[in-house]
View 1 (cartoon, rainbow, N blue to C red):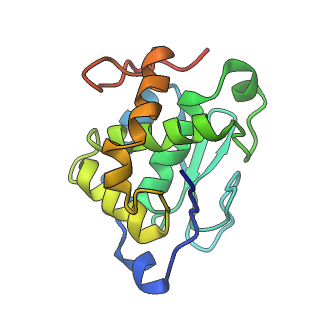
View 2 (view 1 turned 60 degrees about the horizontal axis):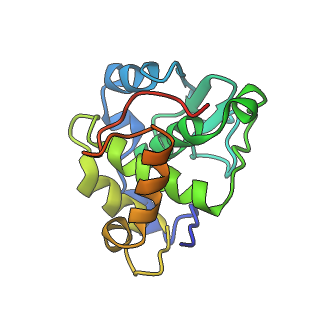
Length: 175
Protein backbone atom coordinates (compact mmCIF):
# COMPACT_ATOMS: atom_id res chain seq x y z
CA UNK A 1 0.00 0.00 0.00
CA UNK A 2 1.13 3.48 -0.74
CA UNK A 3 -0.63 6.42 0.85
CA UNK A 4 -0.42 10.10 0.30
CA UNK A 5 -2.61 12.45 2.25
CA UNK A 6 -2.14 15.39 -0.07
CA UNK A 7 -5.38 16.24 -1.86
CA UNK A 8 -5.40 15.04 -5.45
CA UNK A 9 -7.18 18.21 -6.61
CA UNK A 10 -8.94 21.26 -5.21
CA UNK A 11 -12.28 19.80 -6.32
CA UNK A 12 -11.60 16.55 -4.45
CA UNK A 13 -10.51 18.51 -1.41
CA UNK A 14 -13.86 20.31 -1.32
CA UNK A 15 -15.86 17.05 -1.47
CA UNK A 16 -14.66 15.48 1.79
CA UNK A 17 -16.56 15.67 5.08
CA UNK A 18 -15.02 18.23 7.45
CA UNK A 19 -14.87 18.15 11.23
CA UNK A 20 -17.08 21.24 11.38
CA UNK A 21 -19.94 19.22 9.85
CA UNK A 22 -20.06 16.93 12.88
CA UNK A 23 -21.23 17.62 16.40
CA UNK A 24 -17.98 18.07 18.36
CA UNK A 25 -19.54 16.12 21.25
CA UNK A 26 -19.45 12.97 19.11
CA UNK A 27 -15.77 13.53 18.25
CA UNK A 28 -14.89 14.32 21.86
CA UNK A 29 -16.64 11.14 22.99
CA UNK A 30 -14.78 8.96 20.49
CA UNK A 31 -11.39 10.51 21.30
CA UNK A 32 -12.12 10.27 25.02
CA UNK A 33 -12.56 6.50 24.79
CA UNK A 34 -8.82 6.43 24.02
CA UNK A 35 -7.89 9.07 26.63
CA UNK A 36 -7.14 11.58 23.90
CA UNK A 37 -8.19 15.21 24.26
CA UNK A 38 -9.83 17.02 21.34
CA UNK A 39 -8.56 20.58 20.83
CA UNK A 40 -10.32 22.78 18.29
CA UNK A 41 -8.09 25.47 16.75
CA UNK A 42 -9.59 28.65 15.33
CA UNK A 43 -9.69 28.94 11.55
CA UNK A 44 -6.59 30.65 10.16
CA UNK A 45 -4.39 29.55 13.06
CA UNK A 46 -1.61 26.98 12.69
CA UNK A 47 -2.66 23.47 13.72
CA UNK A 48 -0.08 22.27 16.27
CA UNK A 49 1.36 18.84 15.59
CA UNK A 50 0.09 18.64 12.00
CA UNK A 51 2.54 16.50 10.04
CA UNK A 52 1.19 17.61 6.64
CA UNK A 53 0.14 21.14 7.65
CA UNK A 54 -3.29 22.73 7.49
CA UNK A 55 -5.97 21.57 7.25
CA UNK A 56 -4.68 18.16 8.47
CA UNK A 57 -5.18 17.20 12.12
CA UNK A 58 -2.22 17.26 14.49
CA UNK A 59 -0.98 15.19 17.44
CA UNK A 60 1.10 16.27 20.40
CA UNK A 61 1.08 14.13 23.52
CA UNK A 62 -2.49 13.18 24.40
CA UNK A 63 -4.01 16.03 22.39
CA UNK A 64 -5.47 15.88 18.89
CA UNK A 65 -5.72 19.29 17.22
CA UNK A 66 -8.16 20.17 14.44
CA UNK A 67 -10.07 23.00 12.80
CA UNK A 68 -13.61 23.05 11.44
CA UNK A 69 -12.17 22.58 7.91
CA UNK A 70 -10.00 19.60 8.91
CA UNK A 71 -11.11 16.52 6.97
CA UNK A 72 -12.87 14.10 9.32
CA UNK A 73 -10.83 11.22 7.90
CA UNK A 74 -7.66 13.11 8.92
CA UNK A 75 -8.86 13.34 12.51
CA UNK A 76 -9.62 9.59 12.49
CA UNK A 77 -6.24 8.83 10.92
CA UNK A 78 -4.37 10.67 13.67
CA UNK A 79 -6.56 9.02 16.31
CA UNK A 80 -5.68 5.63 14.81
CA UNK A 81 -1.97 6.52 14.90
CA UNK A 82 -2.34 7.29 18.60
CA UNK A 83 -4.02 3.91 19.20
CA UNK A 84 -1.56 1.87 17.11
CA UNK A 85 1.75 3.31 18.33
CA UNK A 86 3.50 1.67 21.26
CA UNK A 87 3.71 3.22 24.71
CA UNK A 88 7.26 4.55 24.23
CA UNK A 89 6.42 6.45 21.05
CA UNK A 90 3.18 7.72 22.56
CA UNK A 91 5.11 9.14 25.55
CA UNK A 92 7.25 11.31 23.22
CA UNK A 93 4.59 12.05 20.61
CA UNK A 94 5.03 15.36 18.85
CA UNK A 95 3.77 15.63 15.24
CA UNK A 96 5.43 12.54 13.70
CA UNK A 97 3.68 9.35 14.81
CA UNK A 98 6.41 7.19 13.27
CA UNK A 99 5.88 3.48 12.71
CA UNK A 100 6.59 1.19 9.79
CA UNK A 101 4.58 0.46 6.63
CA UNK A 102 2.68 -2.40 8.27
CA UNK A 103 1.59 -0.18 11.13
CA UNK A 104 0.58 2.57 8.68
CA UNK A 105 -1.70 0.07 6.95
CA UNK A 106 -3.20 -0.84 10.33
CA UNK A 107 -3.75 2.86 11.03
CA UNK A 108 -5.66 3.23 7.75
CA UNK A 109 -7.74 0.14 8.50
CA UNK A 110 -8.60 1.31 12.03
CA UNK A 111 -9.43 4.78 10.66
CA UNK A 112 -12.12 3.14 8.51
CA UNK A 113 -13.49 1.03 11.39
CA UNK A 114 -13.70 4.04 13.70
CA UNK A 115 -15.70 5.99 11.09
CA UNK A 116 -18.75 3.91 12.03
CA UNK A 117 -18.66 5.47 15.52
CA UNK A 118 -19.30 8.98 14.21
CA UNK A 119 -22.90 9.87 13.32
CA UNK A 120 -23.55 10.42 9.62
CA UNK A 121 -20.03 9.42 8.58
CA UNK A 122 -19.38 5.67 8.55
CA UNK A 123 -17.20 3.26 6.62
CA UNK A 124 -18.42 4.00 3.09
CA UNK A 125 -18.07 7.76 3.47
CA UNK A 126 -14.61 7.42 5.02
CA UNK A 127 -13.41 5.18 2.18
CA UNK A 128 -14.80 7.61 -0.42
CA UNK A 129 -13.11 10.54 1.34
CA UNK A 130 -9.79 8.67 1.43
CA UNK A 131 -10.03 8.23 -2.34
CA UNK A 132 -11.05 11.86 -2.90
CA UNK A 133 -8.18 13.12 -0.73
CA UNK A 134 -5.61 11.17 -2.70
CA UNK A 135 -4.77 8.07 -0.70
CA UNK A 136 -3.45 5.55 -3.19
CA UNK A 137 -3.69 1.79 -3.01
CA UNK A 138 -2.38 -0.94 -5.26
CA UNK A 139 -5.93 -2.28 -5.65
CA UNK A 140 -7.04 1.07 -7.09
CA UNK A 141 -9.40 2.30 -4.38
CA UNK A 142 -9.62 2.43 -0.61
CA UNK A 143 -12.63 0.09 -0.59
CA UNK A 144 -10.84 -2.50 -2.77
CA UNK A 145 -7.81 -2.27 -0.44
CA UNK A 146 -10.02 -2.61 2.65
CA UNK A 147 -11.40 -6.00 1.54
CA UNK A 148 -8.14 -7.08 -0.17
CA UNK A 149 -4.66 -6.30 1.19
CA UNK A 150 -6.27 -4.50 4.12
CA UNK A 151 -6.95 -7.89 5.68
CA UNK A 152 -3.25 -8.03 6.64
CA UNK A 153 -3.79 -4.81 8.58
CA UNK A 154 -6.85 -6.37 10.22
CA UNK A 155 -4.69 -9.27 11.46
CA UNK A 156 -2.12 -6.78 12.80
CA UNK A 157 -4.87 -5.03 14.80
CA UNK A 158 -6.27 -8.36 16.05
CA UNK A 159 -2.82 -9.62 17.11
CA UNK A 160 -2.29 -6.50 19.23
CA UNK A 161 -5.74 -6.64 20.83
CA UNK A 162 -6.91 -3.38 19.26
CA UNK A 163 -9.98 -4.89 17.57
CA UNK A 164 -12.16 -7.93 18.18
CA UNK A 165 -12.76 -10.75 15.67
CA UNK A 166 -15.98 -9.00 14.56
CA UNK A 167 -13.96 -5.85 13.71
CA UNK A 168 -15.22 -3.77 16.61
CA UNK A 169 -12.68 -1.74 18.59
CA UNK A 170 -11.56 -2.98 22.00
CA UNK A 171 -11.02 0.66 23.05
CA UNK A 172 -7.48 -0.23 24.17
CA UNK A 173 -4.22 1.44 23.26
CA UNK A 174 -1.28 -0.61 22.03
CA UNK A 175 1.26 -1.16 24.78
